[in-house]
Length: 77
Image 1 (cartoon, rainbow, N blue to C red):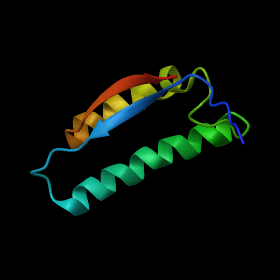
Image 2: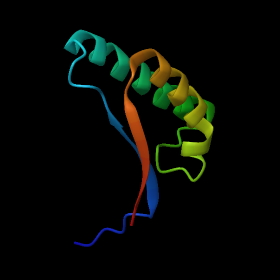
Image 3: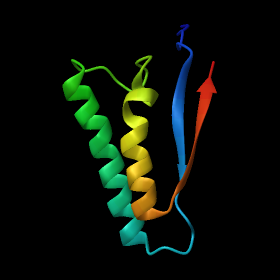
């Protein structure tokens, strides 16, 4: 069986090792909430939607200020 995965971009997020796990989990929950809000607002589209990064990056940057994680956007083929 073959499957074709479309070219897409993803956020790669890394929380600092020195923050408590509970704080990192809280940050992940908020990041996941951004994804869920996006799905609801865009008719169920997922992180594979062409404008996902552009639509969500401002919210991710706000959380970055609060939780101190780093991120990069990587293109997958």
